[in-house]
Structures are given as structure tokens and as C-alpha cells.
Amino acid sequence: MPEFALLSYVAVMSITPGPNNLMLTASGVNFGFRRTIPHMLGISLGCAFQVFLVGSLLSLLLDGIQAARLPLALLGCAYLLWLSWKIARAGQPEAGAAARPLGFVGAALFQWLNPKAWVMVINAAILFMPAADGQRWLGAAMLAAVFAVVNLPCIGVWAWAGERLRAWLASPRALLGFNLSMGVLMAATALWLLYDEFQPQGPARAAEVAAAPAAPRAVGTMSVFDSGLSVISVK
Image 1 (cartoon, one colour):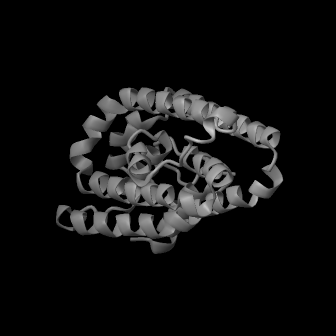
Image 2: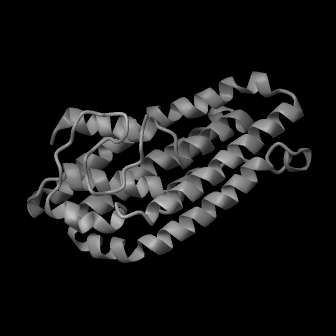
């Protein structure tokens, strides 16, 4: 397993903007870092469990993933749009008393509807899993452990940054403006991910990539790996 390439891949895909990190920033602003920790753990362990299952059952899942990608994309987009509405309204006075951060279970389950998580996990399983079936379970466990360890501090930066912004957003108007902006960004992210799903280089080509995976290259300005899967751009 190319350790440096794997660590770079997981770190870059974890720390770059996406639905999880936008949600963590908003949670850090509204609830603080400490109350956001269950949300962070749910993301990291949820992704780790997801990559373990996908890596272990990759050959069995490829056809199913290809068939289910559109329903998953639609469900994920709908859920992200609902979250963007909730975030945009979080600064309104009437929502303050009942508001609470997303918990561990909710964050873990969300990864199964998160398009970026699916792209990240499938790419990692195809590029870094051992080819031999006898090594697949062990390789999947090691890959999941790397995801859990590397992902947590990367996404924690976003929650920490959100908490640092709290002093600048002390007034209700400033907080409302921030939450509205984050809601708009979340909605735009959801729609962009859904649009990207319909492009020719979408996850439907996973079977082709599995047959002839491309070698990883150094992180560039447009994508992390030269694979047929749709990799979230990083800049």
C-alpha cells in the first residue's frame, strides 16, 4: 500500500470544502467546538465504516453502486438542501432555544447520502485495496483505520475555525447573515454535486476503473488522482 499517497489522498479529500466541513463550520459558530465533537466523530467513524464495507465487498458492490447512484444522489441532494434550509434559519431568534448540533448517529448515517463521501471512499477502495481476495478484509480494515485517524483532525479544523468566528458574530444580525451565507453555500454544493453526478466521468465508470486503476500522482490543482471516477476538485 503506497502509504504516503494514501495519507495525502485522505488528508486532501478530508480538509477541502464539502458538505461535512460546511456543516462543521456552521456548528462551530452556533454551538462551539466541544458540542460539535459528536458530529465530528460521527463523520470520521461513519466514513471509516463506509470504506471498510465498500473495500471488503468492492467486487460485489460495483454493479449495485452503479444501479443505485442516481437514487443516492437524489436523496443526498434533497437532504443537503433540507440541511441548508435549517442552517440558514439557525440564527433566527425563534429557533435558538430548540436548536442543537447534529449528533454522532446522524452524522454517521449522513455519510451514506453524502456524494463527496461516496466518491472519496470508492476511489480509495479502488486505488489502495490489495488485489488478492484473501487480503481484502485486512486491507479494508487498515484503510478504515487510516480514514478514521487522518480524517478527524482535518475536519476538526473547520469546527475549530467556526468557533473562532463566534466572537465576530456576536450580534444576532451578524450570526443570521453568516448562517444564511452558509445555507446558500450548502445548497450550491448540493446542486453542484448533483450536476456533477450526470457528467460522463461520474461514478457509473467505477467498473472500468476497477479493471484498470490509474496510478496515483502528486496532488495537483484540479484533482487528486487520474482515475475515471469523478473526484472532487481541490485547489
